[in-house]
Image (cartoon, rainbow, N blue to C red; front, side):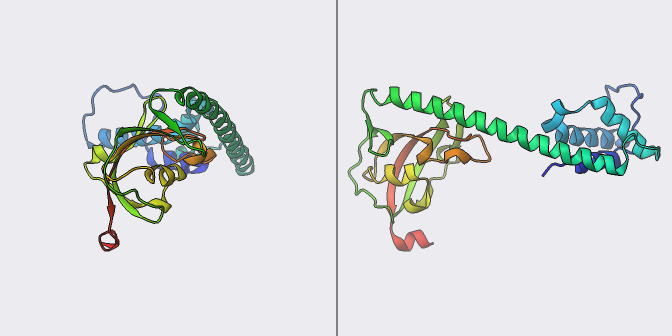
Length: 238
């Protein structure tokens, strides 16, 4: 987890020999140059999350001060207080951004589902799950305690793909009672061999927490799912 202290310490330790007045190079001439440039890339990456919160010239000034052993403009006590207040500021900013994203995603999802429910072939269950039959299979429908094998592609409403067993070339095997509620409900509607499209409201997906990846809070999700088979217990245990 990135902290102000860790970022500055890593930068100070890693950039021995750094000079803010050195002219920029357009060619890396030796191993020292390459190591130095690598360290700069890594530091730049670690600062990317907070780049709008800092003045880079003061960052480099502080780094040089530490490396030279000169007196810093902040005492240890002042630095500790700035670190604490900065962490609180970043946390408050993240909470506000999360809340704004949750509100936006919820409103957009509800508007989409309200319109989509009247689209040709779309059916809506009592829970709010929407689905459309692409191909109706002739196999047995699974129940919630079954393990199934399926191919799927998941996208956000804007078309962003966040997961696809099809792209990996490997179908997924999972127990229906161990996935998001929209999947638990939706796949029980499908006879084996079927292909369905699902639109899953956020409360049947990842809710207001979202995921660490591209699925934001209160996101409505779209899945293209092919239910290949219900896996027999012996096979599922392997």
